[in-house]
Length: 111
Length: 115
Image 1 (cartoon, helix red, strand yellow):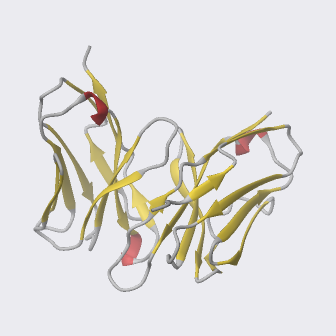
Image 2 (cartoon, chains in turn yellow, cyan):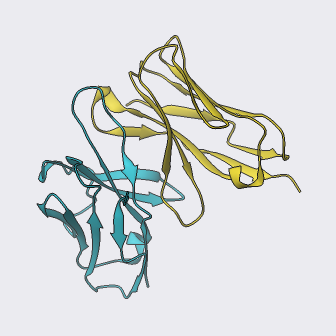
């Protein structure tokens, strides 16, 4: 089946830093979704990408749909403490309703 | 705008008891999904409804699990009888499927603990 590999698994951020994470797939995806989940809450949709090469921003977040259609990137600029959480990438399996989720990137504030 | 609403937020029950989780999707959405999240397995899709009709229930782990969607604004997930291994966070999500759209919007979840 289609698998999404997300990296890094975890990262520590210092306020003001730019942060990057990525997601790769063994198959071509036509849609990439990026979610953020905070403790005790459900995943919140941050950005949706529908076209190869597309670059979309949502505030300090920017996501790109890779040209090969097998990867996507999420960048957080000038990170702040409330950016902590788990970031998931997701994409539809066989271009259908069923989403495959990455294992998540856990972002923590560096002490 | 109201997002997906789930109740209860927390449920603690004893093994063998019946558990019913409830979901109100976002108004106007035609698709509803029930997920289960655990540390070991991450997010797993249990069942998918489209226009109130169950389309794919291949993720429902056992016959102890059942889901209904009697109308466009309400769905239930029932576990009977419950077992300790059912302990997890259960999410409901809704979306508009059709065309290119694949976005799903999640509720806050129900944390289920079966003792």
